[in-house]
Length: 191
Length: 191
DNA sequence: CAAGGTACTGACTTACTAGTCAGTAATCAA
DNA sequence: TTGATTACTGACTAGTAAGTCAGTACCTTG
Image (tube, rainbow over all chains, first blue to last red; front, side, top):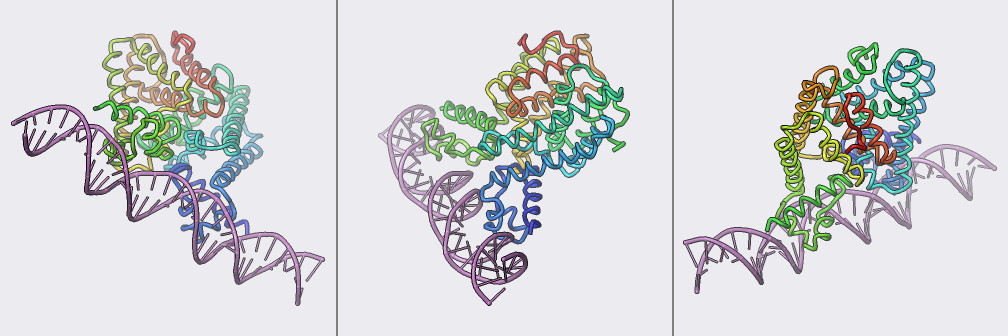
């Protein structure tokens, strides 16, 4: 079955975003799923293989969003992205970028490349959405869309990290400020 | 001697910012210093004790900055802070906030509190500096100084994380954008 | 019905981890 | 001079990590 495989990936994703890649073990996965460690190794021979699969799943989710939301106004696309992060903030989970980039130096090559791909893909989406929104007159900002996208991603990523220690209202305060700066017609409470 | 103790703290700080708290061991410290693991345990019985000492050292550095730079204009204080992060970006090291908040859930109480203190102390400094700079007419921004400080810290923190995977020019692009938004009279090249 | 693949289990290895503790050499204070 | 304190060493333990591999139950397919 592909069921076990998907369950492993889902649980690994959660563990990475809760504790970090280097702070969970195969037992943290096998025990809740009621299987043996060797069953996890059957699907993912090494931990790096599992990490790659988690990142691949994220890449597919981003691709899915871009496919499904591509027709929407740029700021509406941004709203969907912010909504995903908002849900994470409520669950006290950080994002994969915020979790995997600090551990980047402990990874080896196929995984490093995957993490890079993931960041670039998110950046590409946000760049496109912001550029479109500006053309549509629905958001306003100075400078290149890519540079602005970096700052938006930065705020999303950091707000999850800082919410852990400063309280979860931090997410809303930071994002509302970002949305105001961009002249967005909506706020976090509208999500 | 306090020498060994300080060397251990300095090396631990570097290891945390290079690989993460959960990805270095006592051997990574004892070997380069030419001492035994048990010598490290003599100074810091547990790894959490070592983590606390690293954070304490950071708290002292921040306190030192605030003491020494308190008389400068707010934007000049910000310049000094950005300069510290700029140096980190060149060394491909991230900051302690960016390194320790993802691992926050794996820590226990005395260390968690210390990490929180550290984030609050940095936030307090940046809030004060931004507020002062706005009063002095040297920076301009909308909203509360604390919320703006959160975004500035967010950009500093994330730029180090993202520089790792997107290339180190990412730091300059992000920060120059932030400085332009704030109407600062200086840019990264002026540091 | 036989052969082969899929999805495991059970038992294991190797390597490392944090952490302990008795002993010791050197310094310092009464 | 003695006794305590500081800063270690050396030898160890117990636990956990990732990873291996032979065996097996259960389909599926020719």
